[in-house]
Length: 351
Image (cartoon, rainbow, N blue to C red; front, top):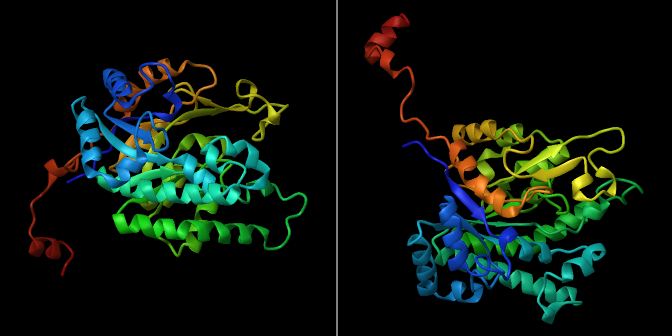
């Protein structure tokens, strides 16, 4: 049978707050279902939405969580470990900024923070299994990104050493996810050591092609880098196991280009936009994914420098639904099948 993409899904991270309906899973589920969403991508470190410790140890808790969502016509698409993955590898240049994402007990202690992140990622693997999920989404962390531009000239071996260390930290985690049958889909994102296809391959090679090392495809980050996001699918479709539907626009001028001159988001040449307001060709993307049999979720990650979040979410569900392709179960020219036997076809060839 042909594979069909699932959706629309909604990533909850950008909507979480202490105000209703964004302060509990039940309330935000009611809100999202009312907008037409079918799945929720849950940030695993947000206790308003999930108790990760309990989810990792209690199948009953996970069944109750799934049942509550099912009653609303929803399911969990993936667990997100973006924050924990980020904190697994933090360059000292970003130490203070990323410390704010960590529990108070491990702040100002890089070793303890890394151990906490490692433990969180292992818990998310078990929780994913208990929830019946096959994929999680994450960030790779960053040891090399401050050296992105080769000036001053990078010392020989600097990048190789960074990626060797990154692989050393991720390999035991990948093996733990293999044990429970769950993929880690990295969102390739500027600021992370994995931000494009080349950097993804650098880690994948060091992980010996680990089958759990996969990609959370997000075209918005590729458009802002001026990377061919359609050719990317041609190259890496076998590794794409998750999909963030996020729009962006790139409008360079005589003052700024890809680096955008340290400007705030609203003044940058490259900006994230709500679905349909940017330049990403989602028709072509959904067609490519259908062509290659992608059968997982299309999840809205809302980020926009102009539009209100609730408006973006309201518009996002029908936008994704309208782009989902129901894959045909037959060839369009089946009506013209001549019904020739194998002997007949051989005869046509003079054999």
